[in-house]
Length: 397
Ligand SMILES: [Zn+2]
Image 1 (cartoon, protein in one colour):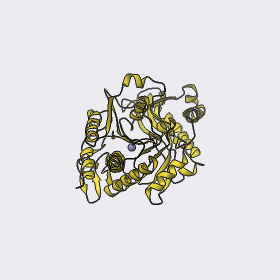
Image 2: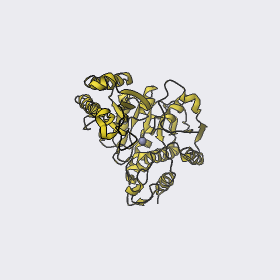
Image 3: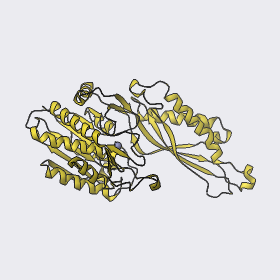
């Protein structure tokens, strides 16, 4: 096993699920690795009460008592532009354990595949960046090379928000999220919402005396599917490879509390894709208008409208503001990579929003992220690492 594979396997074995103590613990492990490599290390506790109180805070969906920021710096010899690699250390929970062939945090290697939750999203990319920095030590560029390990990306963007708040900046940034080695200069956004549909409870044997909140939800659901179709009819060329670039999905539905009662409330939660170039306000207004229209068409809902609440992770769309940097990443790959916009939100929008040209490029397929038997091809991690080192050598020269 190579050192790269060993480190990746070790990191996958740390179950750094967002909000768990391991999400904080893995930062100490990474800080030790960086110190051993001779990098300058900034490891700090994120001031959660202060950050979460700021109006621009991007949201947080899991409870955290503490979280850490971590930036390693390979100091440049002086005068060159700086480059940041930014990778999140949090992973999503493994889900249904019976869907996995073995332990979701095994870090098992089989041929070219390294398995485990987070292998693809995105510890593979993080290790590619760590080994790129290690490679750059041999012939240090003039500009600084930074490697940021961030927490809380999956549920909003706490870590990247926190490092920007601490004052960390770079002249450009690559996020090695799983893009299958494609170059991704833009992200759609996503907003999390909650609908409350009112009804009236009654004994189910006399159901016509009540109003079923489940039944009243149906026209609203249909209206949301129509809204999604409208919003995906004519999209940005970067998004054309996706059948539904800006997806709207209801992820949870809860109604009623007794099988023989008419349900008097239905609560549905979902995610709403935000288009490239669209503001959160515009997106929210579009969804609220569609819900309002569906309510107006129903006599009960016209009197007792569905309420819409916006909560949790608020991912705005983002786009790399500097096409020359996208071209530099393409050039560093040494091949002709695919280029597209990602349908999901990421930290790109926070970094690009702070004026830092940012592109996603990394190993592993997004189809495997968050799925059972998640894995990353080790050969892609190695290829990404080579590209990142080459990019830094040229950008920071
Ligand atoms: Zn990710």
